[in-house]
Image (cartoon, rainbow, N blue to C red; front, side, top):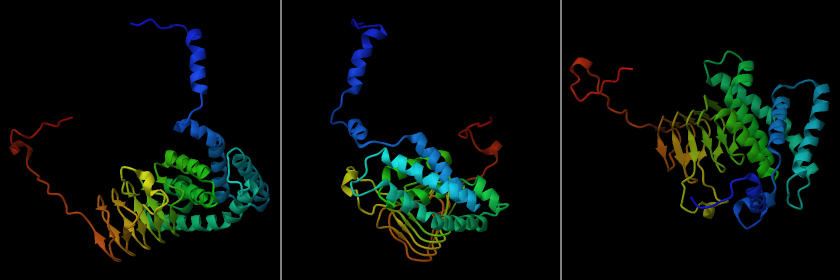
Length: 291
């Protein structure tokens, strides 16, 4: 083997110098842009969810809302913002949207209660349903995304994604009475438009067609539009900004769509053929799968 230093003392300073060196690479640019403390954002998000979903006492809200706004200002002050974007203005605009966010979430909970026969009550849905946590975070992150702080909104959405397995970009627009049953593996892209009374199941992807150079499509509508009263079953994939799923349609499990369908359509794949035989007469080519 070639001669090389073995001790920590001999490699420490060159390593520090190399890591501290700034350049024109992506990680150097990320450091220059700045990023809020992840733990602070996660803690703030959890506290905001608690206020919106559960808190009703005016005396508590009178203390919690200013505290929530103050912490948001501190987080925003830790990242570069456009010159015309004041952290206190963003916090005030966010706070004034909280009643509307709560109203939407209340309807989302009602939709879950109506759509899931396993639900035993509203408290169970609020406390335990991954969809409600993911959509709660999304509705707040969407508000901040619209106020011009996408980095904070993305951190919030990724916190919910890690906890629930539901990946909703904060730029996606979602209507009233939205419910994701089960939810694991759902992906909803940035420019998705979802109407009212839409229900999704696990594994649904509302995504983009992916060219080799994706930056060419940045800022364009890349994800589908789902109109009112649509149901999309497990494993379905709908791709592309030009795809519009018409009002009242039902998309079956494992369907793949890259084009629009008219209102009140039913889309399903043909049932795969299956052969059922007696194992004793299945033939030698049949594997022995005893476990």
